[in-house]
Image (cartoon, rainbow, N blue to C red; front, side, top):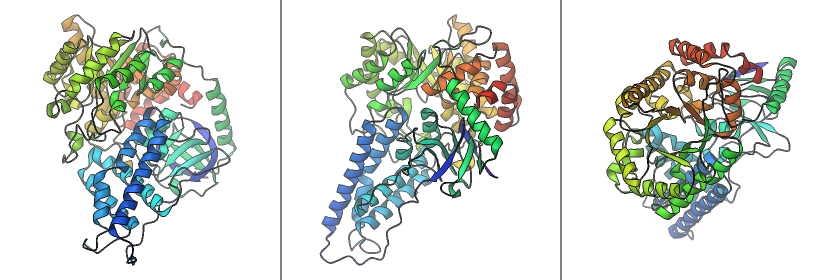
Length: 570
């Protein structure tokens, strides 16, 4: 038996044949004689038409998707119509271009390569867009060639999908009825592949070198919790997969009220982006919404949505949770979510640039109109609406955001803790607002100075890192101090991907986190595990994790004291 090791990002033990993603679209030849009757104008029009066709196809797929998948497809559709890419390609058609004229296919290929290199050089979030650019390039070249777009392989039987990495537009539309698990040789724990695997409930492993070389049709055993892939497994692993399937099918649905073994209440909320997401989350028993991503209103358009459009979008989510808490994150634009009417694509380091709350500095009015829309939607619905700003770094910023909320008539302002400075000064930041929510994806990336998309840095970009857990504890301790000083409770929640890890959820509660928000699919598993521990036990496990020397040591030490995880294959 041959075993590959990587980073487990979604638990599960499955057995199945491997299907490899098709090889990338072949690079067009550069030294091609272009017929005299083929004009620059006609070739340029072909590029424009192909780009529009790709955008239309991606938008059509986005219209039938929801949640993370919808967001990814809409962002990729915007990339397909990027005027910089199209114009750069058309310039390369001219005989006067350096190196002479190119075919339409070759021009698109070179132009996209230049854009990708520029983004890669910027690093951080902009480097994450390289995969999107190369995906769009392959789709446009395929369209120009009259060939099907790259995508998930077809199969008559369920299979485990293997690849070097997966393009965002592909991971967004995986069919869980056919694709039963994911394995990639690159990527990181917060990559598109990892996030969407968790949202779809697919066992998944990333950053496992060599899995993209497993022969098509080879049977493998995947353990998403352990992060291992075994080729040609023995009878013991076959029985383990069968046992997990039986356990997974009997895992009780979330009751809608999360209670620990000693009766301590820790509400479990859902992360959503649209009204449709909210309805599904309510059906899954979510006790409210811990993160409403408002970007969906703003993506795939060239201008700011009207207040009326925003009211309708937010109201659809509020309506699904009458009488329950819905935490709204104001527009988190910038970095990996650029908007033509709001952000500057020429920033030298967008991950550290004008994003989230900071866009109010350069484009005042957009945030105030959004808060106006949130307040109007709240007025005609019964949800208990809380509002938080992303990328808050200082107490002054928190105070300013709270004043904007008050002016709009919103009673419960809060902040996202994603920047380490906000965690370090949580006691003063929370004097100005009513609550905080930890965005563990960005907090980990900023604390560890590790791009969350890079496979080689996957061990650094892990929310189990003791340094990240220390920042969580500092935030909870700061909130407790602010609560004591004001006489009013200032709760801290977690809405990052860390909350969906049942073992880490126990640690987060032990560190002082009051609520956990996750994809609806994770609610049952997290609730089942939390029901087996008391608050005192959670606090003891949190201390174990904080004292560990590494992320892997913290994870192993905690999991060793939670036998239910192995029993359930989590």
